Image 1: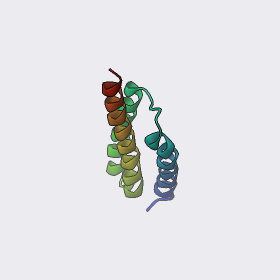
Image 2: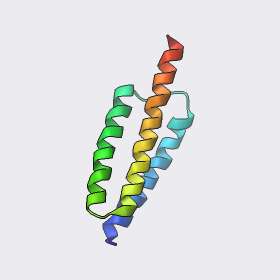
Image 3: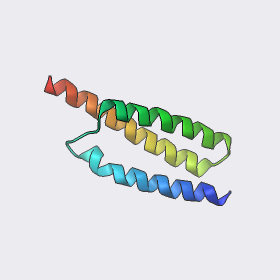
Image 4: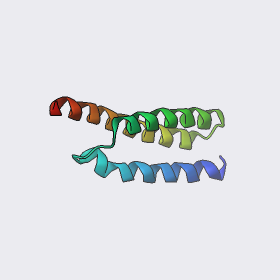
Length: 82
C-alpha cells in the first residue's frame, strides 16, 4: 500500500464525520449539490479503484453514499413541503 491511500482514506473518514450533522439535521443542501457530489465522488471512487488504492476507494464510496442519502432526504423533504 502506498501512503497516499491511507491519507486519502483518513481525510474521507473526516468528511463523512463532518456530514453526520447534516444527515441528522433538518436543513439539507440543495438537491443539485447532493446529486453532483454523488456523481463526482463516484467517478473518483472508480479512479482510486483502478489505481489500486483500496482504502481510499472504500472511504470515497462511503462519502458518495452519504451524499446520495442527503439527495434522497432532500427529495422527501421537498415532497412533504408541497
